[in-house]
Image (cartoon, rainbow, N blue to C red; front, side):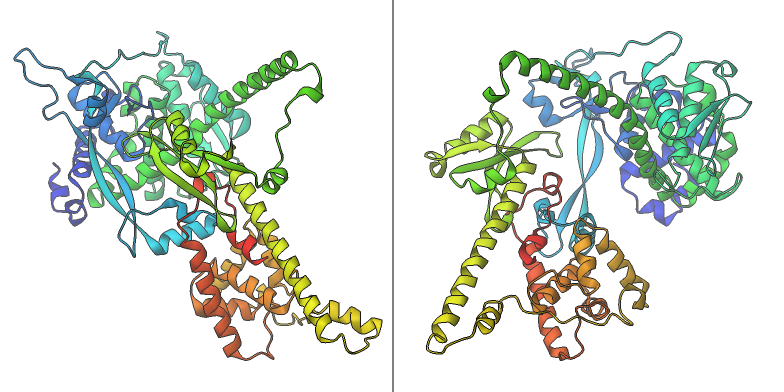
Length: 602
């Protein structure tokens, strides 16, 4: 452990796992070998059950353990997963279990509801825009760090033999070549030649010496990927501050990000390490050592940034692969359709969203799949619920087939016609069906009101003009508001302006701006007022701010008393809170960001 680190209050507050990682990094820096030794690279740590790679700090925890223990396997499993598979720990010559002391603690965060202190239900976010979700999470949810231990495949008896990627003795990597080529074609152009490797933010260009100038392919890949990492900071990508010149603290921190990202990408591409590249960052070693010693969180922030860089870069490989797969699938689909059907009329046409929404005789459902913290896959059923929402039915199951079977065997669905559709379609059907129901309800109410008016005035002769006026009572004329000294330019508080601009960028932003600018898309003044006020509440829960923004809009009438709008504010806050607290909502990741509010108020 570094003596300097032991006297640091920030270091003292770190978890044991993070302290250990800081100690290893500082020890490597003091020895002059860079951030890590050569043994850290050689395949990203991943789940031995799902194949899903570990990310961020957990990747470094497991990489450090791999280096320390000399493991050759990059697969890790929990004790429960090992038992479920019927595997066991290997034993040494003395008969002692190799699992003793081999567990490595990795961390994850469980989200808790601030009010109930219970695990947060992510389905609460359904129907909110991204901005609304972020605001809700900031105000109502807090994270708790938790841990569980995993064990390396080298100490496990019974785990299948690892399939190792074939390596070219020259170090040539098709995957690395694809990443570099795709990046140059679609992102920052890479120019080869010269004697130095660097990235020019102002021109968005990467310059790397010719391949022949490097000792081997590994050094060429490491250097090129390092510069690609820098280029992700461009404003059109991850938008980091790249203004620091060489020798400045900002530049050194950017080098730290790029260096960690280079390691992560090399692991994902299963490249071998190059000793000269590991040691050639000595110009920054002293600065990194002092900064990490002073504040270890600098390292963890850089790790988080490096993970974002890695995901952004590796997505280029996935995009290229997916494009090829989709093209092949489209071709096979066309061939199979031609073979199966002689004419277009014989094909079974899938009903549209509109047709499914109108067909109440069929019970539509969707299957939701998620992975828990133990990398176990769980399946659950969702069906259409009230007010344009969807609702979870029954328990979760590890088998998709079992999940559907249990759902169909439920007593309330035995005699019904069931049809599976995608979760996105399910949400669309529920939304449209609710809209149709509301339109039908309003139509009936209108007819009832007109019938009542006709009955009340049946004893008096009404001229045609008065009859027409009576029938239009339900579509009241909305007074036009003078927008002088109103609108977004009248807001002097920058936070208020940000709220309006953010709301204008949401999915229903066009409607928000039309209301804010005094237009009247709804039937009455009150409906327009309430609709705008609710939309503002979806962006901020501060009453004073809500009223400032509302009074700057074209819906505010100075002729109405403050008590009128204060009462409306209380009612609309309660309305929005009711939407957000509904338990019968679908997970946000599957909802298509449908805005429940737009259906309820417009």
